[in-house]
Amino acid sequence: MPPVGKVMNWLEAAGFEVSYLYEDLIFVESNAFLIRFESADPNSILIYTNSECETAKASALKQLLLDEAKKHELMPVIKGTFSLSQRNDDEIDIRFED
Image (cartoon, rainbow, N blue to C red):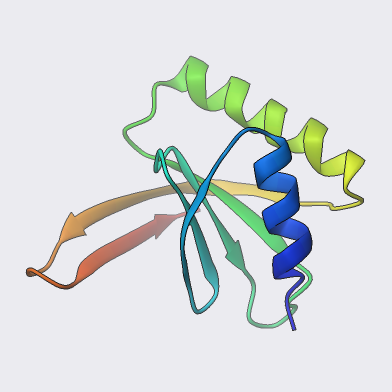
């Protein structure tokens, strides 16, 4: 079972509001990044930044998340980027790029 509560506390302490939880994903309000739990190891926490996020902002964001994670005894891994596209009124496609 992934450490969802601990991850939510970490994200809120870093100044982000969790907007949605879906299966193995945690979305934040800004969509600048998302958290994905690896299915093989639920304690493995992966950070994906939005492909539309500027490089400098993405770098600062990753550093902020990693620094705050240490305070919560979490060891997330920076993986890559993701992009969102609307499939229809109710569904969104997410594409991950490692």
